[in-house]
Length: 570
Image (cartoon, one colour):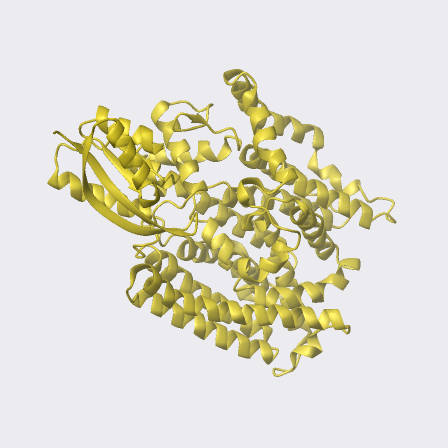
């Protein structure tokens, strides 16, 4: 029975509530977090150079062509920076915030057509609260906006697939699908078409006994859609091919795509099964509900078309991602809306069945050793992650800065309280209460972590510490011109913070830099100090060490000690 509250929430109010939730989750820290290495800093710097040069075709990091990803995210980042402040980092993060928000709202738009409104809101909210999306939403990269594009495509497909056969699809669904297709190609090439293509192929096989198994696709208007997608993609593809003599496409395929398919590209290789192993963490805190929901909804795929569609969305693409040798946690993010929707479907079914308040968990799990074991393992991992996260929030400041962070302690207390209360409710079989606990916990803990905890870690942000030290040195030595050569510390965040003229170089060129720039600086990591001083001796150049800093380079997992040197006259 539909209540008045359901009618209100199914309209603009539901979207407004989710928008407010997303802003609370995604905005804290967006202006105070330094650039993350390495991908975010590279994307943001390349987009800033687009703004500075006025070149919207060629993608460059400093003077190096960046022939890896299509131009979509660079255009979006350049546009938001041009409208606000190209020198700050936060404008380059705004497209990711928008992409994450759109993905959540699109998930809700699909969910509210098939389940009670409170569970539709819960599905979208669980997606918004996953630690992976909360992180990607504040990084100036492709993945949050790619998620929005793929969710748009899949939402349009799902609405076509689940509609009654005697009902015509909404006239705008084809537009949503093909706009999502074009956007996904401009953002990350073949990923979006692959996921939708595998979904369609899986449904084609699953519905092999249905004589009309392809009629539901007529609402997508493939001819008009392909023309629209071509109009979105081909102009830039032709322009960049002409501007680079065809090297962009060949470099992107042979230098980025194929290496990822053949081996672990850029030391990111891992065996199959990694994403499954990491799922409890990357979907945290909603992963406590995800494991039983997946087990519960699997049998429903035979009778429920939406459940069948969601599993077709997840399984084949997940297998592909597991088989590809190169692995990064965010690769499976486009499959998370389907998992969130399955959780909502499961919770809705639990509510309709009205189990006793204290029904044991085992009564909700279908018979079979595997079916009962998986949720138990997942719950155990979830409990361990919650405990480790709470301890990590306290230990990290002690390890990195040798100090106590009161914000870290507050976040740890919230995380531990959520873990204890969520685990207790889970053991009692109160799954709807578990959902409320994890959502409330996420809303409290993530803004603290990203808004206060992470930005205040001094030892974690080496590039920011370098910039702060340089500002202090310029006050003492006004003749320093800001021209910097860095030896041994080559993180892209340093380029974004200091500017594109920053030299990421070796000890020989750093010594030559000081000889030719009287106001220049050389930043030398301690492992290269001896070689740097030998190069100085060969040039008969005297230097003065102005300062020294120490920090943790998380990209390499090692502590670094960096000296600041300038040339002095004999």
